[in-house]
Length: 129
Image (cartoon, rainbow, N blue to C red):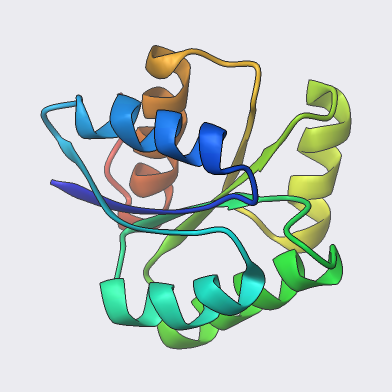
């Protein structure tokens, strides 16, 4: 089971993403946050395998702080950068901050689950599906 934590400032998208991922037989959403502060404490308590992290949490520099915190306290966890920006810009942003993957908010449930599985496989060495 892949344990996922979602940090997104949009309650609507975060709730939808959680419902999509919880509908997958191999994925469990273990927590959600709408701010960087909530994410900083939440990921440590929830101990997810994958953090789906909005690129623009309140105060944009905080996305990078959350990613750095995840790397310190959960070095085995993967981070998928989430954003509404165009895919090529998102890919560059993900590389720049050291995320394991990226996904646009314009995706469907299947694509989001696939991004989570790929990221989980990137850290464990097991192939994602």
